[in-house]
Amino acid sequence: MNYSVAIFPSEHVQQEANSYRKRYDSAYALIKPHMKVRQPFPLNEEDDLIDAVSELKRIARETAPFSYQIEKVSTFAPAHNTLYFKVTPSEELKTLHEKLYHGFFEGEKAYAFIPHITIAQNLSNGEYADLHGTLKLKQFQYEEQATQFHLLQEQEDGKWTVKETFTLGEE
Image (cartoon, rainbow, N blue to C red; front, top):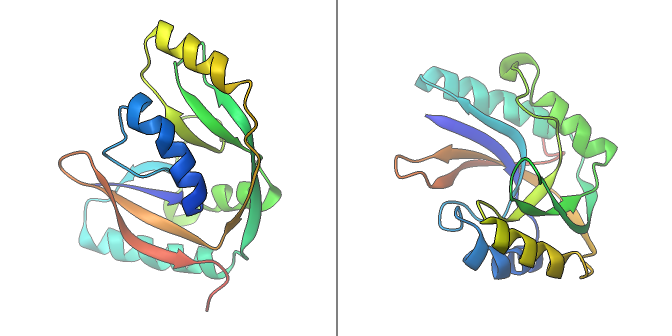
């Protein structure tokens, strides 16, 4: 089974993201708007899951709640026709990301950490150009609070569900 770790933004930001995702995100039905802080990783044994949860509890306990800003729409073009809400990478967010690649979660990073919330992906060149042209003119300014992160589990149908939630700074 594949797992990942993500932070869900506020309901307001999720609604804003979904207003675009419904039409432009091929993964709309698979997962709600989120900021991934650990790329997917496999856990094959029940003991591995128990160890992962234990380590995530430790990381959450040692991580204080923090704020982060969403400042605009950005893109992964030309590599991918993907648009996203760009999250300013605070020190706390970068530290959490690093913790999720050490110890039990040791692993290679497939990509540089670019915190974001996807709002459109797998677009044709025409769709991408139209939507990007419209969205780059709009203001998106949100101050968000991260108080939890979530262990997500990929289901056989490709949907991601919350396996467990971890509250930051909680004993």
